[in-house]
Structure formats: structure tokens, C-alpha cells
Amino acid sequence: MAARLVKLRAQYPGARIRGHRDWPNVAKACPSFDVTAELKRIGL
Image (cartoon, rainbow, N blue to C red; front, side):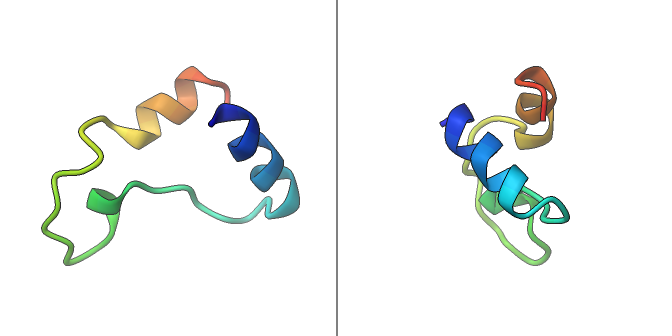
């Protein structure tokens, strides 16, 4: 998955990558991890 995110980040440098739960007014618990922290961990 990290390779795909790197490719998409290169194609769309201004885009924000978020998990379902990170969108306003969404009452979902998925993904069950912090997307922002994971992106930092993999260098995005």
C-alpha cells in the first residue's frame, strides 16, 4: 500500500490522504489506526 500512496502523492502533491474516520460528520471507527501517524511512519 505504501508504494501506491507514494505514487499517488507524486501525481497529486496537494491532495490530503485521510481515513474514513477523519472526514467531517462521519461516524465510522475505521480504519482502526491513525492514518496521519501511519503516513508519517512511512515517510509521507
